[in-house]
Length: 467
Image 1 (cartoon, rainbow, N blue to C red):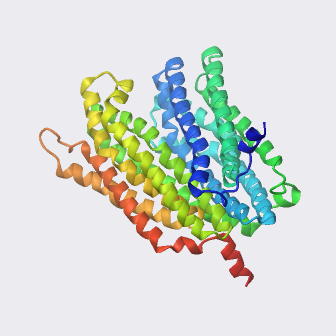
Image 2 (image 1 turned 90 degrees about the vertical axis):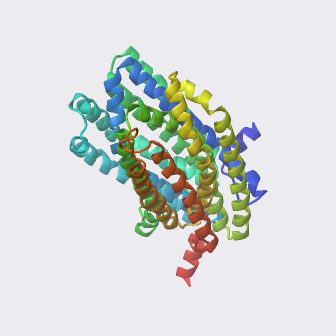
Image 3 (image 1 turned 45 degrees about the horizontal axis):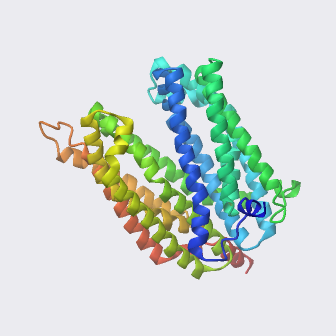
């Protein structure tokens, strides 16, 4: 019982072996990412099987607009996580309490704005994206329900970010698992049993996310030994709220830029024909699982760095960076080996067409070594964000994605045109991604070594302001 209580408690990452603390913190997030990926797959199966292909297309077409919504809350969640981890590491109870309270209030205000504005702009945005007439009504209805129920979505993301900032990734995992299970069950009930169609899918998502948000809030309310949560801490502080947004906005913009770049590359992929499009879908689904350890270690490094920068333990941050990066590289190397030798078996899960399996495997072999480079990028970017330097990772992402990846993909496609490949060789998009990942890792390492992140800590900034 005591061990279970310890598992679901705030964790001080400023003590103990860095590698051990990083691994302990990463594992729950990795499990959560895997669960989320399985949920997304199950959700698509339910929609496609019980409603039809048009419904699946309608839910998928809502993606770009949903990503715009996600960008806003990703930004607030990242900023909240950084400030919470630094104040928690500094044992600054007052500022920790005010930060958490302000994040709760800021989320309420932002959610209300989206609940009003979202339904007003949904249809114009769908028309701007050339959404087919056959699915636009379903798509608009789906999005409107999600916008009107965005309070649960936003609070789950923000509050789980706060929990991770406090070192409690296990509770965030547990609530994500609850949300995932409830969502799938409600999908089946609303869609298969009640015949509610696409609105049923959206309603299931809203209810599941609201439940997980309530669980997160109840958990935080029981952590009074670390901070206060009352009317005074909930009062919006303009300066503090601005710091949260400033810290998180670059991460949100990074997500937006990445999404737009993916849309541009998808346009090129579509020109290669149906077989290559199907190949891209398969490889990207495998990629989703292969990238999970990197994202998990990156998030762990953000919290680890934040707490230790807050505690003034920069030497420990350096040691943790080495440990975490080596572990992440080791895991990614193992994944790369598995993909190279057993990837074809993964391809057979998605298709039995020999030509498609062979093409997908060829593309995956190009991409596989990039996961090692991404391990370096995610860990070093995570440390910089945790220290309060969210601008540098944003610029690196812009350079590697917009300046390198997109132009290189189109250039390679143009240079490899032939009678057999009139629009260029399909390898162009995957080679460009591998190059972007590799150069991104080199740029990250170079700028990390320069050490500008060491001067970004909130504690140091507050000391300078006080002086």
